Image (cartoon, rainbow, N blue to C red; front, side, top):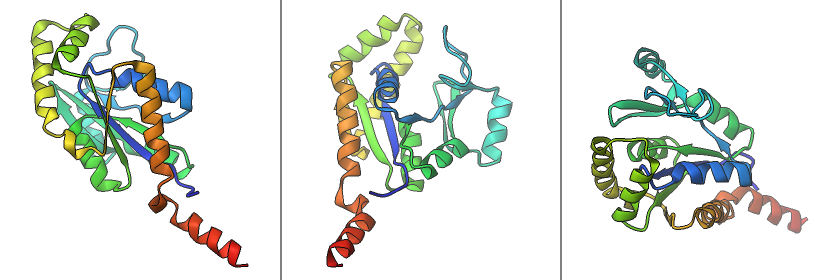
Length: 204
């Protein structure tokens, strides 16, 4: 099998549970998680360097200038970005890395890493999404309306993703995403050097 790690891009609507899915993949299957940088304020219980690297706008823009991000985007009044060094070090060490990022960032990553696996997490429908957003209890009506409007925009980009997984049951969703990644890693085009070596071995 090929030695370099796989880059897995997971996107989804805000409130679809992608953060919980990613956490489950890391805990259950041992994936590496790239921690994003953001300029938004920490939510209760969030720790700098665990959920996000919380940065000032000035620090964030400084990193943009130094090409320190694989991708970055502005989303609902805040900046989010994927630090480059950690991701490339992990991939070189043969570890599979998950990026949990927005739609526009995902397209940017795919252009730089053509063999990245793009997965979109969604709720079964819009009503379920709204219920989950309200159930979080951390945002006011205006912010929820912004997130639903953003979800409508993002829904137009779903067909740019290679895999769509519906989060109806969280544990089923985690296992399905892992299965998608494994099947992709077993694909012929990802194992060409292994196949060549195997053929050579049998010829001897």
